[in-house]
Length: 309
Ligand code: MN
Image (cartoon, rainbow, N blue to C red):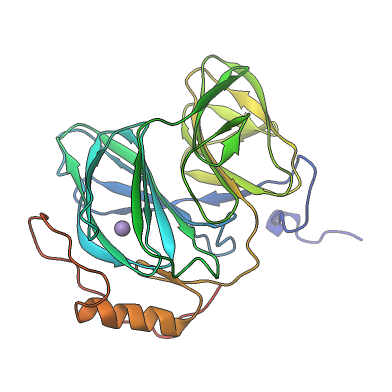
């Protein structure tokens, strides 16, 4: 059998592999506020999730800009995971939480049945970070909302790599954060240039988002502004990193469920989405974010043909 269109062949990691499967995705970029650039890594058209991770934005604004200012808005059916690389953000929510987050700290908000929150950057230093969502599986998606701040997270050293584990377990250290399906989220940095090899769970699927510096995964160069999906079946994540190279590693048990993502909602069917929108429009369910200096966000019109994926 001959491959007639080798240039069009795109590697797919849908069956378990040993060590070598990589799908490469470009991040799409938009400007949220003047100077605040948001790069979307998940969802991708052909790769909606990595485990329960269903949304991943990388944002970056040089110092002196207008910063981030996201008025109160609702969420259902997910957890938000906020992880900063530079700068500070103030979180407020409808449970009465008011929490500053700094680099190295985790803000974990469980939306469940419904919560509203706002986010404002503090100061005018460079602001850089990651916003992730996990989809709550059936049986957990309607749970009561909650918010937890974790200032002390475990870290490890393994060869040239040092890492902070903010969700799940890696290299024998475990985050105290509570999630509702098996997941991993870790911020890895090379202390000096060299090869690395980390033990990972073959039952998980994984992806790498390079953040800074030069690195290789499976001997292939990996660049910022791209997401590298690594499939399942791996026992090791191996590669090379230059001194101070930094990457995000996410992983999780693949979820055999379909989800609908619309605006800030994650659900299992369109009816749940429509009901959540109605409730926000009519001031029900989500409560009020106290202390935010301004109006809440309005729900956009419903998109025709919402589809589970
Ligand atoms: Mn939000």
